[in-house]
Image (cartoon, rainbow over all chains, first blue to last red; front, side, top):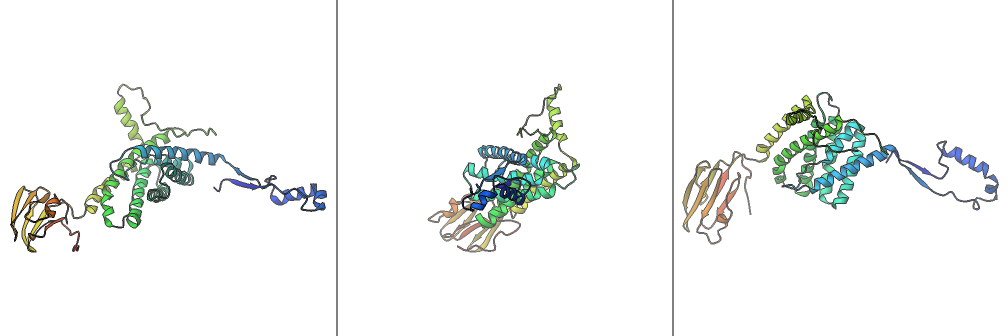
Length: 216
Length: 145
C-alpha cells in the first residue's frame, strides 16, 4: 500500500534521516571513536503505520468479502449467474471515497473471497478478476456522467454489463475456445440487468443515509 | 458500517406498500431509466443475435442426398420417407422435428430426439435419410466427422 509509511530504525523522526544520524553521532561520539564494531548495531525495526484510510479500506473489504460469501451461498440455476451483492459495497465506496478506494476494496475482496471460497488461482479466480477489473474501469469512466441524471442504478447496470462482458471474453479466449460460449450471452446479460438494477437500488438507498462516522 | 437495509424505513403511513415503492422509485434518476431501457433493448437484441439463426421454422428432409421435402414447423404432421431399408417416420411439431422410427440397426437418429435449433441434423445413414432444421442463416457451411 502506498499509504502506509515504512520507517526503518527507531529514530524515525519526520525530521529526516540525515539530521537524525547527525545528532546520534554527536551524542555518542565517544563510543563511535572507540570503534564502529563496538557500537550497538541499529535494530532494524519496520514500522507499518496504519492510517485511518487503511482501516476504512479493510473494513469495507471485509463487508464486501462477507457479501461475496453470501453470494456464493445462494443457489443459482446456472453457474456464473450470481447476484453480485459485493458490488453494492463497491458502488457505495465509489460514491463516498472515490475510485482509488473502490479499486482497493474490490481487489482485496477478489483476493480474500477466492481464498475463503477456495478458488484462488483457479479459473474462477481469473474470471472474477477480469470481470471486476472491467467493471472498475467502466465505473471509473461512468462516474463522470452528470450525477443529476445518472445515479448508482446506472453505474451498477453498466458495471454489471462490463463484468459479464469481461468474463465471457476471457472464457472465450482461454477456458472454452469456441463461439458456443456466446450462446450464454443473452442469459448472462438479462441476469446482469436484473441484478445490476437491484444492487444499484440498494446502493442508492444506502447512499441516501448519512455517511457513518469512523469508529476506529 | 455498511449495514444493508433491504426493507424500506417505516414511514408510518396508512398504506405502506405504495409508499415503499415510491421510496424506491425516488432513488432512480431520469438517466437511470434510460440506462434500464437501453439495457432491456440490449438484452432483447442479444437473444436473436447470439441465438443464431433465429427460430426453427423449417425442416429439410433429404433422401439419398436429394431434398425429399421441406416442411414448415408450424403444424403437426408426420412424414414417411422410403429408403433402401424401409420407411423412416419423421414427426413434425411446432418448432421441432424428430425421427420417430427408422429401420436402421443402431437407431442413432431416433435416439437423438427432438431437433429444435437451426443447423441441428439427424442422419439415418443406413436408410439414407436425413432431417435438418433450416434457419434464416446457416450455422455451418459443412460438417465433417
